[in-house]
Length: 357
Image 1 (tube, rainbow, N blue to C red):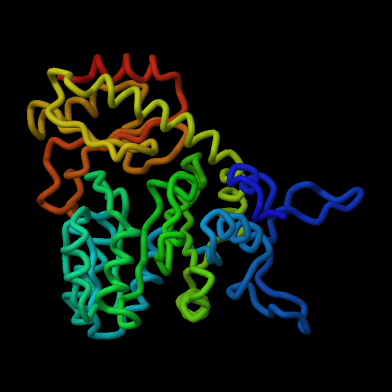
Image 2: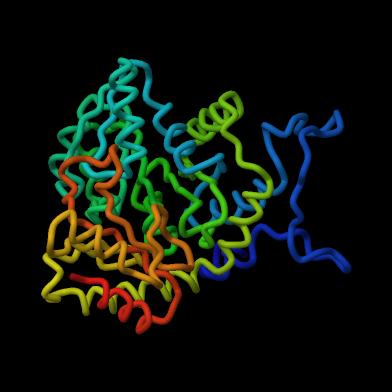
């Protein structure tokens, strides 16, 4: 029955205890490090009922089987672990700088070779994937807001390489499963920083992977990685994300409406040189006049927007991304990444307008 429900309904209805008289409506938080012998699970590093409730919801929304991790980077690291020692991973030039740092570190250690490509050039991506083990996509990219045609990329890989194609991983953090579902386009694996939109309240760290139904082999490898590397989420963190995901559709709808209105007002503003918006979602980036100093001045002048390094929360957030040492040099120094929250759009615009140089 659940498969026939709309995603917004599944986000609310799944991951619940059985409906029995007198039973609680919500799952509790399972604080335990071990289990009574004789059952399917013997130790809490392997599984937890609170994780499982969240994994049921997220797996349904993405159309696969979910595993939760300690953080978004733990989930990305698990995905990259699918690359054999000395293997090849293909990734966009502009991705989350934590992912960039991870690939750079592993390449310096001789663990893998990383090939960088333009996220919007389908032909270049397919060509670069020859002989690769993993294709790691991020769409929209962070913070450049580039969109990859995932379906066209997967189609190109199948046509050119058949069964020898790489494992296709797509970071779906910015879009969320409500805006796009990469597994339906042929991707093998989806990665999330659930810290962001899925949680939605800037109060927890958690990551997740979701594997396509036909890739049970990957699910087993990722589960083994999580168990042996210990990159497990806490039960309280899992519960917070489970609670947050109940309102994901409402928050994303509001954030997207706000982002579109801000884009319309920022486009053509004398203090804005360029607006970057993928056409959906609550994330946008702008390049402001005055270079690095001008961008820093905007971050210092806002009062309602939160100057912080995260995104996807109910509060609107702004940040100059090149302030981070790991950010790639091709990201403009005057680029500000904005995450639209759920405040009144007129209040957000008034604050932003007074801060612009």
